[in-house]
Length: 313
Length: 265
Image (cartoon, rainbow over all chains, first blue to last red; front, side, top):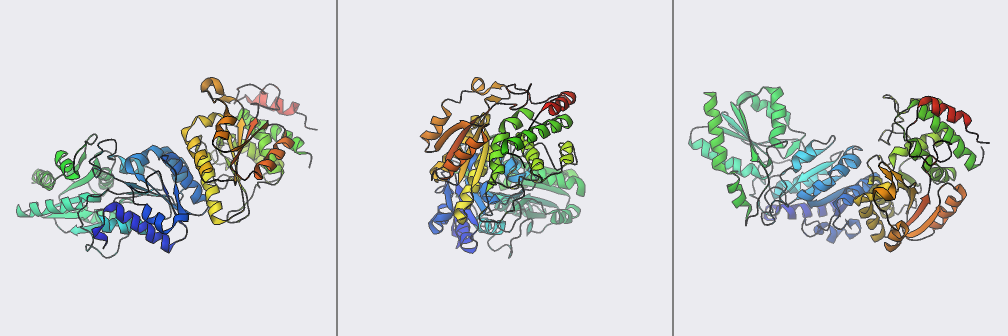
């Protein structure tokens, strides 16, 4: 059962399964075969697995070369260190619109132990600005598995942001078919819409239940694809609700909330809050401690939504 | 057609014409790499209109993308490009852009422009060809300045680690980069020794002796290991007034005058 896997294990399993289905899939790591669980692919397809050593830049450039030779490379490392290859990704991958798939694991607060150097809170912003890129941030293991499998069908380059081990299985029975670029209604509502990406989905659902007890009807809209954003879903709710709250495990600048704001400015702006992080992370013993410390909790999400609703009365 | 040296000379004349019309070209760098490219194109090792998907074809990656005009000049000399089109290079509507882009003719696998990136791209391409069982080779042409980049050595380490004998690297060692002489900007040390220590088959040749370059290419192709040819070159080679100077841009009148003075027969 995929829901019993951790998000990174779901990545490894999806890659191994994709390798069974397609012989053009190759996998590159930067001394991160073990930590990203790409080793699951290596065990089944050793001839198509390449370790670049601790060299993220070469990993990106070599992936571009493999794509030019007709392969579909998946390159994996910690999301924080994928950023080191950004300019190479811009010039050699995005500019040529090559089918390179970058998978950044240990994203957000999921690597609580290793502190701010390892906690990628900027990666969605970095890859979202690149032309041709598709950016995904699945919520749990089930969705991670589906996102990686579905990424093989995308024409251009893809960035997938995944956590390490922490996740709350939420999407396993939520919908039947995962489509790249599609947002999902996790909960319908008409007063306020809570918009999430990645692992914040379960937190937003908990916040909606808190709001319900206070007589506020909150919709929860989940966007596993940040780019392209599901504008049809957004515009449906832009007319229906009074306010929007976006929640992400990422800095509030340039990420999912910014993407939503950029879209809503055209669809009819409403009172909106962007919840996330300002600044760098911190060392802790668990991601849960960090969510608490940085205020990304169901209580805070509910409080922010309530505050916005009161402004509209 | 004349000898390869005569063709290279004619290409130099056409580079000067381009320089007269396009202030964006790097004339000094294009002149230093020209004989290397002549050896590759002139012997049919790489072709101007190759198509992807052929399991036997070879590939050229020009990592020092700012010298792409040397390819345009040679393409016109070899009859693959109308020489009138050379005057359009760098214009908004022209396909002859000032660095290799994805829609630039004659460079079908690798855009470049950002230094060092073509090296990893070439290594990835060679890895892909090996995985496919394709017999083609990748000829990688780099500058010496771009060997300052960390990604250059990361990528060479991958080539060495995976034993990629199907990639032949030619370093256009013209000894100059933006801020001055290469070794004054940042010491390159014993370049041949650095490659040798990584397990490369290393040759050092005169980068303006086309016959010598061809001999070195033949030896590199037989090496059975990743190989590098350090081609000692001179910026602005073959044009009086530019040879040995760091000048990359020249006024139109001077460019046309130099083109008129160049005698290739």
